[in-house]
Length: 116
Image (tube, rainbow, N blue to C red):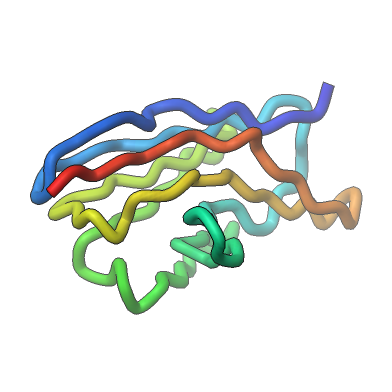
């Protein structure tokens, strides 16, 4: 079964840290993997992605605070979120693109809530 399984969301105070994990199960030849987020009433936006060559792309709003990393052996991507702000509150979705299948995948989402 092809799926992205996320973990690590939760409630944290402003200035705190969380680490999200996303394991890709049954999905191979992943070119790009990473995270998007969606707050209530707004569109889903890029947070951070990493390609299989190690290149990364971050939203301006998270640069210097979030770090994305990828473990190809485990088919897993991580998002270390530091110095969290209330405006980071959203549902975070894992995303992957497989160039072998030419297909995009989305996780079910994990809630991150940052209290002020």
